[in-house]
Image 1: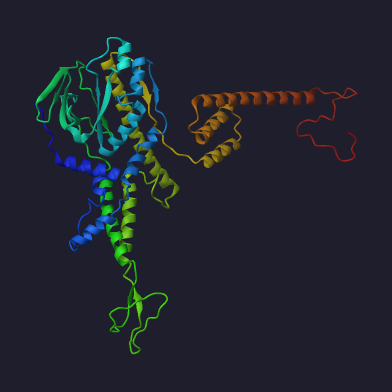
Image 2: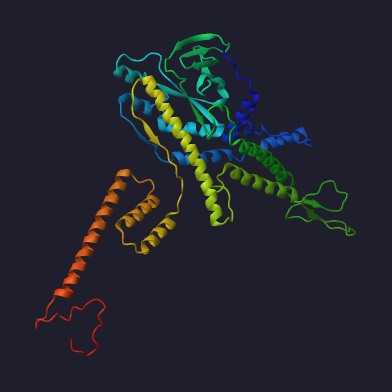
Length: 480
């Protein structure tokens, strides 16, 4: 029996997060604006037409994911034909594993969690060639938390039941809702009326669903709140403030001319005619302008909310906020940002390994899979790194290993995305250059030593033209 998720709050929060990230729905054409109590319907309709959305939620979420996938993830495995095809097309839509992980990571970060179903084709090929030609292999499907209907854990904390819904097109091209139920041994599909459509057994011994949290949470926390919920709510309030601000600028930005009443019904004012007023008037014509305080108040509030969004997201040290913090304070801010990125990278790495484990169960092959996600996201200034490297060399440590390590740091700062083979070639050439320099220096020392201790003049005495280190030169006119 299918148990339906009736949590309307989850649906509302999902809509807010989605609309705030993409700038759609609530933030499109003023649909999410609220009418002021003293505002007329006509004025409200006009304000909705002028509404615009400053999207900070999208860039903030992307900034929390993009650094992790800036480079190709390091992966090692036994290269089989089936597994390589799976890596190149994990969802039967031509999406590589790298791209699927990056895209789903953004959703996991935005919504607080994502679920990945690793399924298998109902009919597999008789031979390996058949499987490859027909792509009769395991595949993945991303499941959003709003579509999760039911779940259950056993006493050991293992997931033993998982049900989600999906929107499909049937054979008549009608949009229908279907429910998919998975247990540790069986699967079943139900229609929109909860009637059984088909069922079967998979025999994996576990639910083939990978839980992917946006942060380090308990596996029992199936639908955790998004860490960007406050950012989305603030962005929604900012949307309202920007609308009011625009209305003030539109209605009050232009000065108004005032003058004594002359009794004329129609007065034409321009730059090439003359405006007269009664001579006995105590006040000549003058322009008046509305007070700027309301618009300035909204401007200050908008700026404050923008800073708060970056602060709440933990990336205020990366983008968006200029501050006069001390070097130590900025370093602490960066360490916090770096740790948040590293924590989520760990979640991504764990999810990818679990996906491949389920592939191995479905495909009945072991590929010895390992992957390594980055843990350090420092962004160094190239000029500063080069200056620091030169300062390190100026210390004069006569150590080949020390100089090699300094050279490696220079390469990482100056050419961070260098090809591994090129990197190895440069390091090998540097090692050879260091060895050649040491040999040349040793040869020079030997030659100098021989000149001082072994050279002889014509009279058999040591040649005084080759002097020992530290010996004073002769005085002018002295016989040498």
